[in-house]
Structures are given as C-alpha cells and as structure tokens.
Image (cartoon, rainbow, N blue to C red; front, side, top):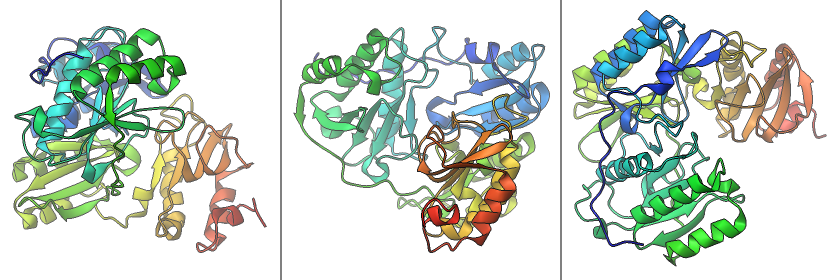
Length: 427
C-alpha cells in the first residue's frame, strides 16, 4: 500500500439529486431518499425536509436504520421541484452512477475522530466507480462497537481517544473488519484508509453485492494485500442506544429520541428543528430510527423533551422495543397495517421487553425496518402474519395467524417463560 497521505475531503453535495429525481414507487406514491452528510442535519435543513414533505409529498417522513430520511407521497409532478428545493438546502445527492449516496454509518454524537474518518471514507468512496448501491462502512469507537446496522461490509473502529481531532493518523489505533458469512473478521492494518480504499475497490470490481458475498479466494487475496499486522477484536460490546437524557461526559447533555416505528410527520420535524435551534445543536440521526440533540444546559434538554410530544423520549416506552415498516397501504409489498399493529403489539410486549427482548412487525419477508433476527417477528403474508421466534423476517415461520390471534397469545403469555411457549412451539 502507499505511504501515509492526508485525509481526503468529500466535495460539496450541491448539484446532483438522482435519488430525488428518480424516486422509488411505493403504495402511497413515490418515495424520495434524503442522505444527510454524515447523518447530521442543521435545524435549517431539518425544516427544509419538513417543508419539502409538506409541499411535495404527503407530509410523512421515515427515518431509516441507516440514519437516512425518506419523504413519502411524492408524485411525478412534484419530484423535480422537491429535488431542487432540497438541493438548495445542501441535501442534494453525490453521485450519478447508482452507487451509495451515503457510504458510512456512525453513532449519533460520535467523537471528532470518528467523524473525520467517516468524512475521509466518503471521499474515497466517491472516487470508486461501480460500488454497489447498498455498500456500507461503519465507523465506530470502543464506546459503540457494533451499533446499528449489522450489515456493514467494512467496519473501522477507533481503539483510543475518539474525541480528539485527527491531526495525525499515526496517533490513532484503528481496527478493521471485513464482513464474512460467519460475521466480521477483525485485524489491524498499517494504513486503514488505504486498506479501506483497496477493500472498496475490490468489492466494486468483483461484481458482488456485499462484502460477505466475495468469493473466498478473492477475500484471501484481499486480506493478504492489506498486510494485516495483528488480530484486534474490539472487546467492548455496543451499549443499547436508549431514548432519554444522558450525560456525555464532556460537559454536554444528550437527548436521544426515536420516531415511533421510524415515522414522523412534517409538523413533528419542524418542532424538532425549533428545539435544536434553541439548544444551538445540530440534529444527529440515529440507527435506532431517531435523532439526538446535545447541549450544555441539562434543564433546556429536559424542557425540549417535554415539548417534543409524538416522539419516543423515555427509555421504558414500549414502542422503542418493537420495529416496524410502513406496511399497507403505504408500501405496495405489504398486506397488513403494520404501524397500527406494532403500536398495539408494543403494549402487550412490554413485559418481554423488560427482559431485553425485541419485537418486529414486518409487512413482508424483506424486513426493511429490521432485516436481522428479533426475538419475535410477525411477517405479513396475504393479510395474516407468519410467526418467527428468534429469527429474521426471511426465515421460515412456525405458523400463520391473524394479528388478533397473535396479540391474544402474547397477552396471555407468562413473560417469565420463553416466547415459544406463548405460541405453543414447544411444550
């Protein structure tokens, strides 16, 4: 690999809006994806998204598990004006080749070193043609190892102080992992940015959709070329990002809040922008499908929490433990009203959530809101739900039930016993 180089900088985002000019069709119109730089919005940009959703969509905004936004209900007549409107706010997309519009995922309120590394990775990715659209690099530190999307193709983890700026990369110790069929394979590389560059170029050239699909011989050649210097598996487990108010340990207080099941409306987003502006805070999107604000006045954060009604703002809110996609009628692939059902399921699921269990109501087997395994997954199919215990939406369900039947079994279940007992999958 080449000698150490300066951190590359991503170019301006203005001037190209491919995913906005060609939104994806859904059951409630077209869906326009918005990719905030590094997952951060200024209050003015948040207002632009809210106003864009109100003027050019149906007023609904989704927060994704990759900490991006989706404006719903766009039409053929409104998609071009929406693209221009958001481009003026600095939220235009970056590339025209079908590659990832945002390549990196970081924890909300990540340290300066993490943000600098993510910015450098974004610049590297823009110089690589042919990257798969879903390519993802997670940039972490030891406080948040393994947060968010478990589908990352490459993971970089800062092992030492992640709060200081990256003045000299030599001062940072960074572990790297490539996704494999059996999970991430951790090592250290002498030059992590060059290593990430080579890994992304190898993925693009291979034609594989994800790093885990790279043939074994190609993966072995790549690792050999990276010249790993040691095995370095970060030992810290990711803390669960819980809603509520917490001390950041640097004189600031954070407020984490989720959009219930990843959905908010333009009015709620306007209120969030007002609260952030009053706190002099940017708005950090979270892979929990929510937002984070920060400030030095803990009392002001508590007042902001109290006025942001409609969001999940407390750690024991049962809606925070159940994932859901938009479902019918918003999504053409869904046959069940997942948002309404998830809200009802969350209330019954509360005692199980208190044990640390997670639920998921998916409109179909794709599992867009949470493709990974959950303790209880309801998968919509022809108006019924397939029941999957401890598996992913794509797994074979144990049975098919109406929602009312599934809810009744959960209500009658003993939360101290395994969920299999509630659905009579085991004696």
